[in-house]
Length: 246
Image (cartoon, rainbow, N blue to C red; front, side, top):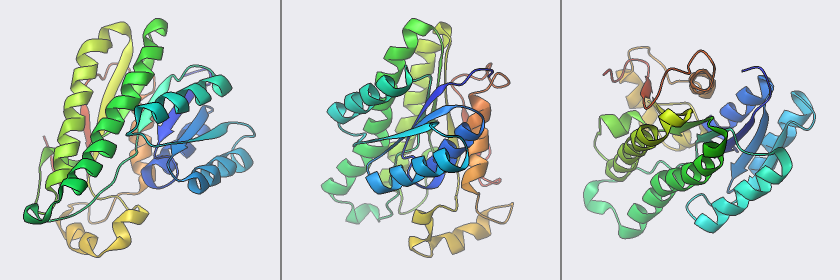
């Protein structure tokens, strides 16, 4: 893209978010690592500053599902690095439960983080992008939001909502020079995936024959925020090894 941009990554303390933060730092951008876990956020920030480029990352701590936290985090980030030009919404949780066992608390927690968090961060970010008539937002959808399976009802619903939000934002802001897209990963080898053995059965259904690496998702996100990807708007890019095609 030429000059350095200010990239804000939610859920940047681990998994796909960490890979995204590192990728954008490697390509010469300033990265704000946002996470609820202060230790993980600081660890990623320190690693970027020590291994990639000094003073090219900062961390902000807060809950993406709380408006007051989101407003504060963006204010803190803007004071340090100027307006946010790229937002990547990676914060999310991935529970698994039978429909008959889902509680109100589980429903609310998943929707608040995965869907409300994506909306709040995008809403605050886009307000800063409108005056510049330029900006990029990439949301984290999922193959489950496009093709739901058993024991994933709440997660699938939240990610279907992310798809809808992505298209709604794109329909409203593409003409202003702001590019909003989403990626829909399948099974990715993040720490949360290995908490149980569900991935061992899932990998048998992936035509490529393995889980995705977080870096592979980060590469697609980087492309969507590049000059080469500038004509892509309101799309949901499948990155699932052939599990689901549309």
